[in-house]
Image (cartoon, rainbow, N blue to C red; front, top):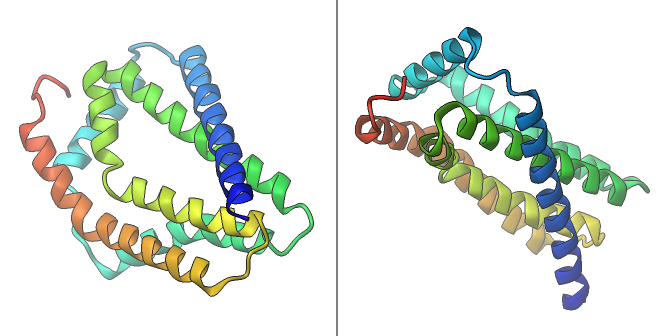
Length: 183
């Protein structure tokens, strides 16, 4: 059983990696260059990072709904006979989005964009990926063990709390020490 779990995890990792490559290729092919629209978006993004939205009940509820949707999707798909194909497609899509966003950050800001992308995703993005890996591996293998859902819930709550409470403070600190020549 453990060998099968490792094989599934490796297979899903390769699907995500393939999505990252496809997303990077897509971003490189479709990147408009340094147009005015791109610069306006970049200026807005940097301003939002330097001055995050204050935490309120509306923000917490919005983030909760946005983050829970993908996990709920995978939980519901786990009850169908096409779960393996949909999980592979979902992991490929998540990888595609990560690759495209990272490439756009690199194309827009150079190496500083890559560093900024890492810090924007830290730590909550990595914690959400851990929660997702635990959940989809269990669903893929049709494991109905309560330990999987407890483990998933722990990592998801940790990611959610770090996104709501920790990440805005961390990003403010990063933007205060980040090179000011990036606007």
